[in-house]
Length: 268
Image (tube, rainbow, N blue to C red; front, side, top):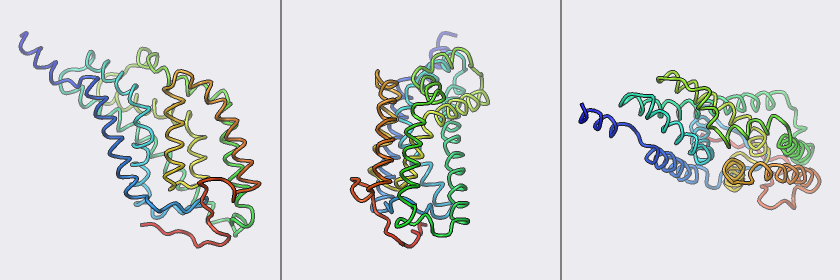
């Protein structure tokens, strides 16, 4: 019996190995992202390409950007799962939790894709960069900065920074429970980061510079000890950045000028 228990313990994923796997997956996703998106920054208004191409790129981007800051939560889930699950179910549970978490972000990406397609279908050229484009992009960045100061942002950020209460009060057994918990955590994460993702879409969703910057902000807000206070400072900074883009977009460093009438970028 003791031998059986020892074998079962070894078959369960340890929190340390889960952390290594999550960080390794994020690193691999970053490598793929850099390889696929090099020289693809078309600036504000970047076309999202075909839905198949976009979904593949978006899921990879989310794995790269979100998994590093989600690693502590996944580690905690793995630790709780070792105590609640039989051998083998621990592995399934952790996998289902991460897949469900990324699934929520995939759903967010599909909503963004649909919104972009709707805007493109109804706008008549007024969003061109030599017309209202800089004002729209700058306004979106400023609005995202204001969102950083809202109570909803505070609630979602606190959940992401201190997930222990979520696991203690909302534990669900089995793979279906893992899916539900991963989805719930993903929704909190979307609520925490939706403003930052709006900035990414506004300045150029295929920009590696802005992607790294936004991912760094997400990591700092969630994991740095002063992350909650930092979000206030960043919110005000993003409001200022939005005004800057609206008033003098050509002087903003690392903001690609899409040109006054640049053709829509086609990506496959």
